[in-house]
Length: 303
Image (cartoon, rainbow, N blue to C red; front, side):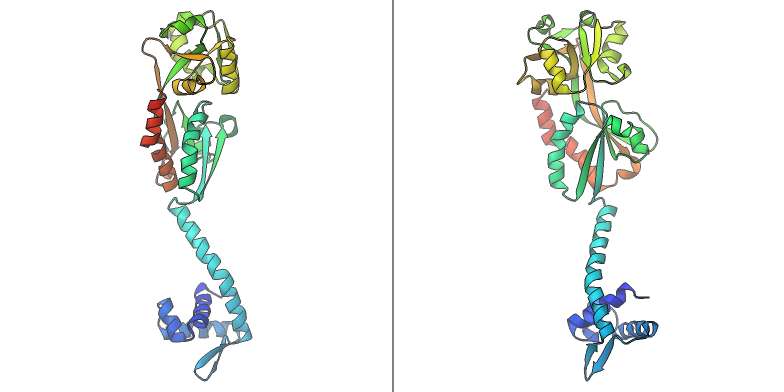
């Protein structure tokens, strides 16, 4: 019964002082405005105004309607503004799934400037065990997937945003530290430490050891990068990590990065999202920030 236009009319008549002025503000004719309010009065069975000479005086019902208008109209305007922001990708929630442990350190370089640039977008980061990998995109558990190993599926879009090299990490006093690069056979006697993921997803196995038919003496897993590199620095084993990450830790730990094979193992961090979401501004902005020159400069500094 009561429509938004009725609330706007009551509010503007009170603010402007006359039907004519209110009609101009609302961009309607005075007759249309009068007809709309007369119809509402008939539906409600009560008057909104009483005319006193040339002035309109709100009735008790009209005063109540004005109070409702002053309370509800700002809320409706704010709701419309927020919904338009959602529709145009200016506001929302960006849920990021991390499918590799070292990617977290890379993500930290992006998150701070992104949050500053997009104050109306909430950000949440989930580790793989919290969202189930690529299925998280299909199930709408996450909006972005950060991974070094994209799985291309219809309805998804992946894009490389960061180049790096996977290297072997050893203690500075380790016998292998004197080499510029190593061959798979040199790891036969080593304890290889990795994150707790399937061997098929570990580059040092699938791109280096398995093709050569070689296995390390022992393989153990550790959840955190800090503990893993502390173990390496204490000569409890060796590991494989992105070169840029190793060089950051090498400033505070006695460790060294060594190329895996003469030509190394080049890798990329990819961002993946649903194709339908690529039009959202706040998702496009995250991709752009991940590729921007500042990120490239940081990448070059750590190569």
